[in-house]
Length: 196
Image (cartoon, rainbow, N blue to C red; front, side, top):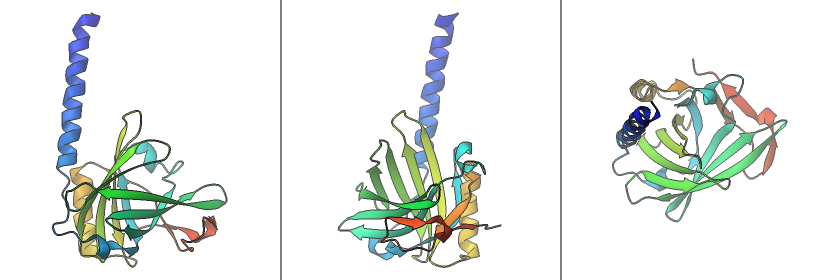
């Protein structure tokens, strides 16, 4: 019996990997992307993920994007991690892959990320982040960002099409109004945003 299930399991894994690759290749990037124009403060309008555990109200995503900065050809994502009573600044440097609007990076604790700047007019931005941890678990995260609240309804419509197409689950959204130069900030500056 074990010999019969072995090839089936291998086939299922192969099809799953092929499907994941097809999904990643199906993610568009902004033609003529200019990294310097995305520099600055961004607010998260909507957020969706491929992993249900990341969108649970009891265990929400604990990162809030604050801004994007340029470092020569690299980009630095300035995030804040929300913990008990404090928020800690986390900076992630991503490097160009050679494809316009596509960057890659890794985390100190392990794992890698591939970032696609899907679409932008530099006032609104649809961002796709493909995370892979050291164990091989893959998570897709999609974000609709804007320079001001509440954001442009046309961009929301475009974003929601991706949410449907990639079968994502919406996640809680947090934005930080604190000073990004501070390594720690009180969590009172981390504000929940209900886009509905």
